[in-house]
Amino acid sequence: MSNLDALIQDLVIANRILAREEVVDAYGHVSIRHPDNPKHFFLARSLAPELVEPHDIVELGLDGQPVRDEKRSLYLERFIHAAIYEARPDINSVVHAHAEDILPFGIAQATPLRPVIHSGSFIGANVPVWDIADKFGDTNLLVTNMEQGRDLAKCLADNNVALMRGHGFASAGRSLIEVVRMSVYLPRNARALLHAKQLGGEIKYLRQGEIDARNRGYSPYSAETWRAWEYWANKAGCGHMLSKPDHAQAHKKS
Ligand code: MN
Image (cartoon, rainbow, N blue to C red):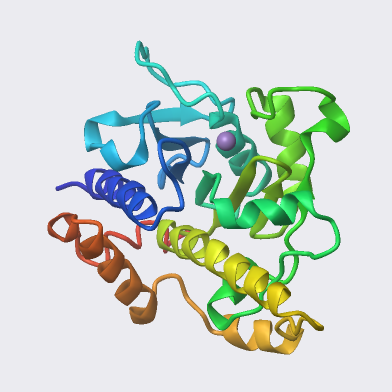
């Protein structure tokens, strides 16, 4: 199996993991930047992530359009991915999803979504909220062109996650494993915060020093990260599709 085939296989696994962990359902998507051509990325055709197979993966350019003749329908919101890759050369993988537990934090302005549990520290200290209406007025809330995608990427800035008001979130990572891990723990962190709010009283967010300590020395290519990937892949029924850890590190050189 070539490195590119292994990369696409990993992207299929990521789709299945995010479905199994209920980060995505019929909607939502995950992409990976082409390791040899930073102006291209891979994303499935318009399909529920749980059903994605290697032949469903399409190669797209940073304008959000397929680089080869493509008859199959594509995700309307592929511009989220294109615009984040365009704005962030450090990012190699992007997730967009509508996970229910994060939605209140894009709607209610009183309580910011920030890390409250140790595994939530991966989302970063600041999670901005993007409101499509600020610039584009009344839309159907979907990011359907590059202009909207770029506005979202601008709001994301150098953070790991941006919430999208009344819609979902976009997360960006240095590797596929990193963005999957972040996207799995984001709703869990949100859930813990929601429950804590129900108990009442002051919320104790993680301290900046605790977030820094948790992320210091953290590598998306570590054995610790691989342990989670292997666990989630098996739980999602695709343990047999796992390639050797070095394949999942295709972006390590960048
Ligand atoms: Mn969406």
